[in-house]
Amino acid sequence: LAGQAQLLDDALADIEDRDPGAPNLYFVAYAPDGAEGAWNAHLERVRRIVDDRLDTKGRSIVLRNHADTLLTLPFATVSNLRETFSEIAAAGDPQEDILMLYVGAAGAKGGRIDGTLPPLDLVALTPAGLRSLLDDAGFEWRIVIVAACYAGAYADALADDHTVVITASTDDRPSFGCEGRGDPTFFGDALFGDGFARGDSLVAAF
Image (tube, rainbow, N blue to C red):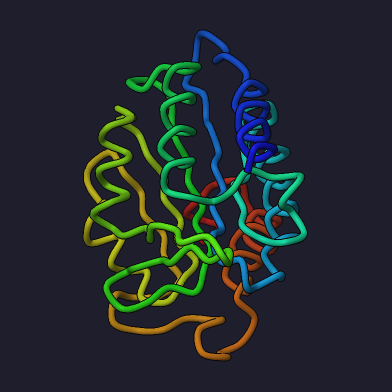
């Protein structure tokens, strides 16, 4: 745990200040499911793609729960997500810049996304909770991508005139990776890998 605190401090310290003159994009990946190892390599692929295609190098961070990343990546916890948003807001301009969040996990009805990393007892992410975190950070322009079952609940809670929400499923249906229904990273691989290979716009990729 002591090492984790330093990992988060170092990752946040590496976030560069904004380039003036145009809106900057900041990218945060959040994968709290410590039982599913497929997210490890997937998140690194996604981060490389976004850094390359959307120019977020120096303005991207991965939060992850897994035994293999305990000493390399900060935990994906609600408190770390709150601190990350706060630091990005301090480095950027919340009224001009864009915050892009990618959430990958199993997901449950109502949009609840549990954080698992035994023996720690972690607070779950919920649509209302994420709305509160984003509002507190002050970012007006937001892109939220949720690859989880019942993820449509996040669209219901977050979508507005300044927020794009892309989800792997509606609020009443499972998606890939829940209860053994296929590869949990399928949606993210399709969106970021195949989609961004065919076009630069988010809509075209979707």
